[in-house]
Every structure is written in structure tokens, then in C-alpha cells.
Length: 246
Image 1 (cartoon, rainbow, N blue to C red):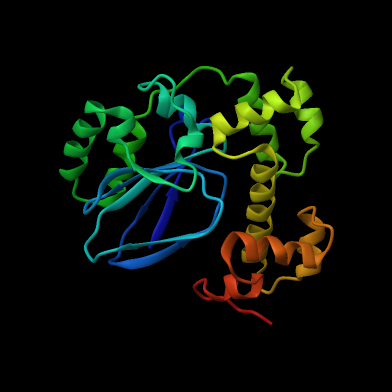
Image 2: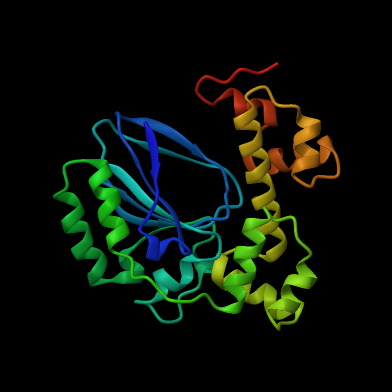
């Protein structure tokens, strides 16, 4: 069973949630969402999962303690890189890397403490406690937060201008902060929103969801689902527990 929980208030503008999985082994298909996660697995250890451009499957054995924290789109660099000057989220795109490569001895000590926990939920709480709150976002992070709040349905030229950057400069900084180009990040945010609307609807009207999500038409939405998951929207939803499709 997958469970998400809110994080401490001081982390709220940086971290979307802490999460944990309990109830045995399984294969988890994770679609791209524009986010970076720190993940603890009792069999693998501490890892960082970078922003993904395509759905990826993860398999874990029975009895696994599995937990993580999910950074908001574009917000991982500051909290992850505080212990590693020069870190860029672009280094992690479509990659899974050991947290020790970024945090060094801090990650080794954290892993020792996590291995002593008796539940996945407790591991998620500890992962949250490892993060150091930062007071303010920089202009690029504020622009990316705006993009996320509007599900990617924004004018990128206008957003870059609000950051006092050229389009080229904004593209470079967006890559460093989020691991994705502005255009791809916005496409993934829009896809994530459309998928969420479909899951909530249970029996979705795809044409209506396409309009709500800023797609030109239903065919445009289907192309993005195929690119990001390798499947049609109907196929994606049919794999969710309890799905009811027309």
C-alpha cells in the first residue's frame, strides 16, 4: 500500500510530500512527474531518483522497507546540493544514483539510522528530518513554482522575463534546478495534471480532460501519454487498482 503524508511546514515550499510503501513486494510503474525523489530501500540503500522523461518500473522484494521524500518540481537542487557545491539536477535526469555520491558521510550515517527503523512510515519521517529548510526561493525557482501551480500551462517567454533572464539563460537555469528543459518540464506537468484528472474521474471524458489540461485536442493528449508511458491513456488507467473504464 502506497501512502503520502504532508511534510513539516518549513519544508512545504520545497518538498511535495513524504511517502512510504507497506504490504510486501511488488512492481511499481512510476510515470514522469517533474520531481526528484530521495528513496530509501532496505535492500538497496539510499538513492536519488532524478526527474524522468519516461515511465520507469521499480521492483522490490517481500518484506521491504520502502520510503521517500518527493521534491517539488525544480526545488531539489537547493536542498540536495547544499552539501555538494556545484551540484546540478541535470546530472540525475533519467538516472538513479546513490545519495552518498552527493552527501558523502552524511548519507552513510543516515543509512545506518534508517536501517534501525522498524517501519516504512518511520523511515519516511526520518528522511524528512534529514532535510535542512531554506528561507527563500531564487527567482528561477519562483518561476518554476508558478509553472507547477499552473500545471505547465504558461507562456515561457513571459515567465523567463519575470525572472529577468533571457530565454537561453532561463533554459540553462531550469535544467540546473529541475533536470529538464522548460518546454519538457511544462509538458510533463500538463501530462501529470491530465492523468490526475482522469484518475479522479474514474470513467473519464478524454476530450474534456484534453481541454482542461491545455491540449490542442484528444489526439495531442494521446501522443503525450504514449511518449511518457509507452501506452494509451486507457491502458494506463486500466492498470490502476479498481479502474472502471468505458
